[in-house]
Image (cartoon, rainbow, N blue to C red; front, top):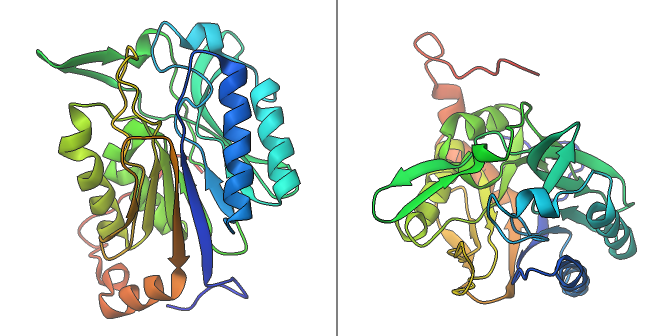
Length: 283
């Protein structure tokens, strides 16, 4: 496999594991401060966690929802331009035409909105005696794939529950993505069981880097996030992982290693397209 054009083979990725409070303005201020810190440490792509400006819960989504562009995304645009970095804006509750979405806005180093990913798969689960949650009580699902290009590689986006759906990652790999980023807030039931497992699975199956950005754990919150923001290599190795506290996880992404892995185990040229296929129904 040949790296595209003059793409830079290595870059630093930062995942901000933010402690999210009920005060939106405080969340925004701290998020922007941590983006600045990450940029000072050499990060070129910085991701915030799912629901970074709001507590996570169906009762909070209508109260904290904003238009895009709006106050939260305007601040992300400004800090991306100030620091000359790509900012993956975790997610916020978005209001549009009377509907609510769980939405990730991505900004380029010039502050331009590059893409807006609305969570495709809503988190509706029932594990008796442990956790029941229904995002669909208040949220609507998105209906489009979301990728953006950088000088380093193409990046594919998902949000939390999207990680469970292998087909999404496969389509992103088909479309040339070498890094998949999932802002996500798994919980104390699904987190220890599946968080790392799913990331390693998506990474190995598609020979891509996979990164997840979680909120920090707050045991007093109505929904307690697992934490453990993670970066996984195309070989399935955990390259970096946080604990549960507020922190920034840094990882140096090396696309030459990705190319080597794809050359050594050439699954893309070995797929049996005469027997099976994963196909996108939309552009």
